[in-house]
Length: 241
Image 1 (cartoon, rainbow, N blue to C red):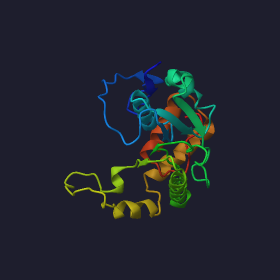
Image 2: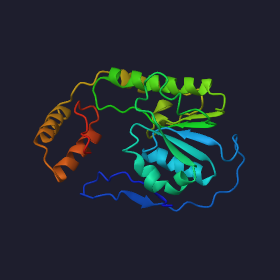
Image 3: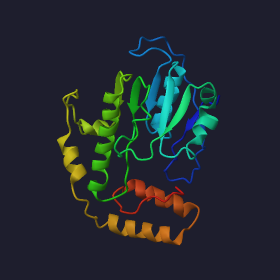
């Protein structure tokens, strides 16, 4: 089996072509008492993602079976054909198709026989309208929670997110974060209108022109970096990125 996991491209100043995968050395795992028996099935959503792929690797190495959800089985075939091939051959790893996270009953089939869930997938939209992203994310979370409640085998549910949901991570913020913490400012900002600043507007316009010209090479990579720096530009990344 290959111990390779997906690598995130480097968006620094150099035109660095990141390898498709990297080798990861994992320390020996000490036996730990868990709330579900060894060999239980765990559902990990967003299996092709950077974080989810690492989570899958950890579960498999600890003796659990993993079912990963993906939006496209063909595009995610590298998980079973390469990265987790040995686990797939022994029936310890498999993929489940969930093309639309926000659809009603989207996870009903994927969750059958599952003992624990790590919900890592989310909906990311390059749009200035929060109404096109936030309600869909909420609907997807409700969908998988409802499926978990209705599946008798589910005993554990982990929902991943950002520290920004609880507090603003910045110098000088020494507030205590616990289960009752909630970042109201982040909620306000998430729903706030996205007016184009004098800097953002021309950059987004330039970005759109680059897409129309379909220039290869460094310009295409530079276009991606601009989108990462200005995520509210209403021009999405193309499939080629």
